[in-house]
Length: 139
Length: 75
Image 1 (tube, chains in turn yellow, blue):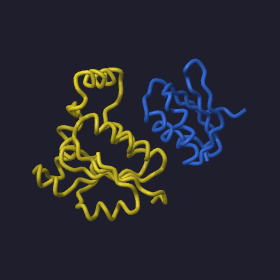
Image 2 (image 1 turned 180 degrees about the horizontal axis):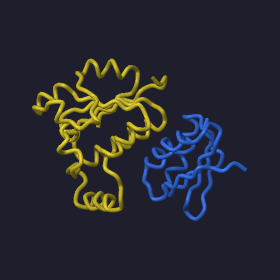
Image 3 (image 1 turned 90 degrees about the horizontal axis):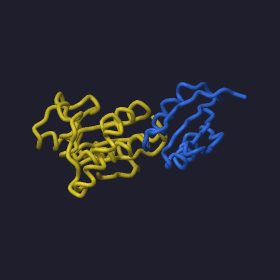
């Protein structure tokens, strides 16, 4: 275990842009040696399904047509997917990704439907205990 | 003059230069050098911060024709 304070990312949104932003935050923290806890709720959890994780997901409404074009251009220029950035983050650091058990129920998901990036399923109490004194960021 | 392992991170966007560096530093022996080339303008601040945070010394930080060059010594 690292003695650095953890950064705790709660991912709610399942749009490509927000997941990309979250993956960048996770990978950056991992590169600095900070433990990262990721808690997946609702649409973010849905995006981690085996059959969705490597598909192109919609963008947040504020992206608009110009934003859509900009993101598509970045992708064509070879920018890697948010899922790959999470895989890299796990490779270089201590990144633990947990599914919210309530969201699992809401979406009717079982663990075997989730990508191997997801380490387990936990409730909100476990999330807060593991978060310790680290900041909690909601995306 | 020590020879450095070179990581070419040109064309990669944030945070990939620092992510690739965190991977590459593990392949270098302690006390040896890692040289990184990057074109992401944010990398100047990122490499300085990464060095302070991880303790790997930033021996050189320079820019030539839009290419940033960082040389780090593994802690």
